[in-house]
Each structure stands twice: as structure tokens, then as C-alpha cells.
Image 1: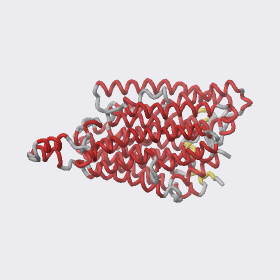
Image 2 (image 1 turned 45 degrees about the horizontal axis):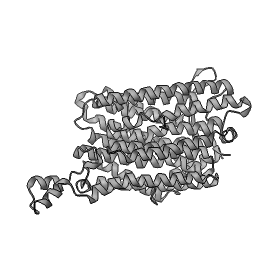
Image 3 (image 1 turned 90 degrees about the vertical axis):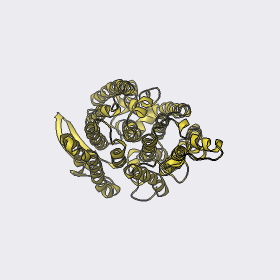
Image 4 (image 1 turned 180 degrees about the vertical axis):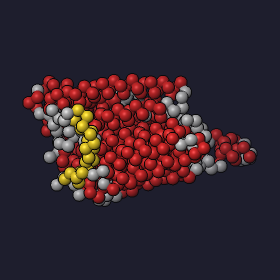
Length: 510
């Protein structure tokens, strides 16, 4: 039985990272060494606040607080339910790892005050999205999040970065226009914007208006969720952004779009109305196309971060597919994949950052023998990659297991086939990276063999010397890989995401 209680914790989860962002901005250059650590402390503090809500949330408690009335009957309203808490904890965890990693990765880079202040500020808006109690509040935090990520995407300030940022803003603004219309139209039809009910719209409002409204929401959120053909900004933005932020961009930011689609299905329309409209199955085929085609594109990418970006597009398809199938198991798989994907893809991008920073290599074809130089980094990469493929008992397997069961429950075997094809394609574009790193010889080693085993000092340095990253960059990738393993192995343990998700799903599907 769910119960709502008034609490200051939701607003603290938003306010704390805002305060740390302001503190970083106010500190002068002589305190520059603290910028990164303040971002890390702010992220960890936000995570602590969210974790304080976990025991109560597992008992069915929903934490809420009304902030202010903007216009008559429309409040700024924070409400952390079980589903929102999953997104919030996942985001704060990944932000904490990425902030720590940034301390090493961004060392010696320019505009560090801007980078760290905007990095932690984006966490505030993400926490706001996760805690939004109505569509008005959601829109405010969603737009703030979308806009304040721009300086992080274009951080390098190269022509390529600025072009990627421009494309990102065009896509996001077009999507936001559809979203704004959809929210206004929702209020016109229903007289409410609440996200506290399992659906606020009724079939009596008219089939045509509801269909227009549904697809406006899908277009609005689909841009951020990278549903094809709305995905064009992702392959450009992910490779050009600093690697720690790429981890956040892929692990959480794109998932915020999928989270919006889930709120639309479960809280705006409701499962029953989506079934009556027949829009769920259409969306399922659209995202199935996205899952397969994005994997095919990933196969053709030599740039490591670009390959990971196309992988992200397909993974968001998993979340949306499980959502629109509307069976208990499919919804479990969709919701838990928000947390699972954050661990897996966040780890992969942080590993990519270690490779780039320590070796200067961006392309997979250049990474022969790199496993000997970066053994810990590539071990963590391998664990996360196997998780993405769906190898048991890693977290990716848990997601796909429930998604396959949910597809069978919906009598849609075709989507099981889609998921299996996706796993095979995932193996086809992840395993060659691992093989190249651990089992192919570097150019230096080949040169040594060609020279009859004579090792020059340069060859010894180039071929065998460890280039492993500093501790502040290694610890996050090892913790991420540990999460991929242990959250999968102990998926049914009470304090892990699946427990919260089962409570949320029972409310949404009742």
C-alpha cells in the first residue's frame, strides 16, 4: 500500500548540487584544485540524500513537497515515487563516479571552472526530473537539463564540437516544441498535469485528439531518447564531449528521454488507455527498428566512442520496447534497464576516457595490444561489454531476461527475436574490441619479432610499459564494473533496483 508523506528530502536532492555549482563558480583560480573535488563531494552528497529515501520507499512511502504555485492550480511540486528514485539514485551514482574520474581526466584542460560547475548543476536538474510531481515541474527541469548540457558538449570548442552542439540544440528545441504543445493540450483536455495517478486521460476525450497527443509526446521525448530517425545528434555529441560527461550523456541523459516516454505511458495515458488506442504495438515496432539498425551502424564505427554512442541508441530502444508491451515482466525489464544501462555504458565511456587520455588513441583499429598497457581499464571494459551483450549473471542479462519474458507474455515472439538479434550484433561489435586489446600484438611487439627478438629501449617502452591511468580514473571504472557484476548477481536483493521497480510497476499496471 503506497502512502505519501511530506518531506524536505526531494528539494535537498535538487538544492545541494545547485549550491555546490555556485560554490565552484565563486571560487577563484587559486582554489582551482578544489573545483573537481567539490563536484565529487556534491554528487556524493546528493546520492546520500536519495539513499536516505530508499528504506521508506521500499515500504511504499512516496516523498513529496509543494514548492510554489506558478499559476492557479499549477504548482512547482516534487514527488519522489519508487520509479523516480531509481532514476535519481542511478544518476547520482554515475555522477559521483564521473566527477571523480573528471579530476584526473580533465587535469590540464581549459575552462575547468565552467566544466565542473555545469557538470554538478546538470545533476540538480536531473534530480528535479526524477522528482517531478507534475508535467509542469517536469518540463522546467527537463528544459534546464537540456540547455545546461550544451556547454559540456561543446567544451573542447573545436569546430567539430561547436557543430555537434548546434545540431544538438536544433534537435532539442524542435523536440521541446512538441513537448510543450503536448503538455498544454493535456491540461486543456484533463484539467490536471499530475504524475501521481496511473493515467489522467480518458477515451471519452476523443480518439483523434488522444492519438495526436500521444505522438506529440513520442516526438518530444523521442528526440532525447534517440529513437530513430530522431537520433541524429547522438553520434556527434557523444564522441566530441569529454569522456566523463559522455558517460553521463549516454548513461543518464538519453535515458531521461526514455523516462519521459515511460511517464507518458504510465502516468499521463495509463496502461489501459494505451492498449485501447493501439499505439503501444506501433511504438514497439518503431523501437525494434531502432534496436536492430543502430546495432548495424555500430558495427561500422571504428571510433570507439562513436560505436558506444550507436549502442546507446539501441539500448534506449530496449527501455521503450518493454514499456509499450505493457506486461508485468516487460515493464520490470524496461525500468531496471535504466539503472543497469547507466552502470554498463557509464563504465564503458569512462574506460574509453582512460584509453584516450593515456594513449591518445580514439579508434579501435589502433588498440592492438592495449590490454597489456591498460590491464585494469580493459578488464573493466570487458566486464561492462559482456554485460551489454547479456552474459549472465551481469546486469544486462537481467534486463533482457525480463524483456524476453514480457514479450512472450504479450504473445509477441517477434520481439524476442529482435532482442536475440540485438545480443548477437552486440557481441559482433563489442567482442572484437576485447580481442584487439588482449589478443592482437601491438605494432611495437610485431617490430620486435621481425627484428629477431632484439628489443630496443623505444620498443620496450612502447610495447610493454604499463600506461594505466591514475587512481582517480581507475577507481571509478573498477567500481562501475563491480556494479555491473554485483547488481546483476544480487538483482533480487531487497535494496537493489528491482525491488523498487516491482512496487512501481504494480501501481502503474493495476
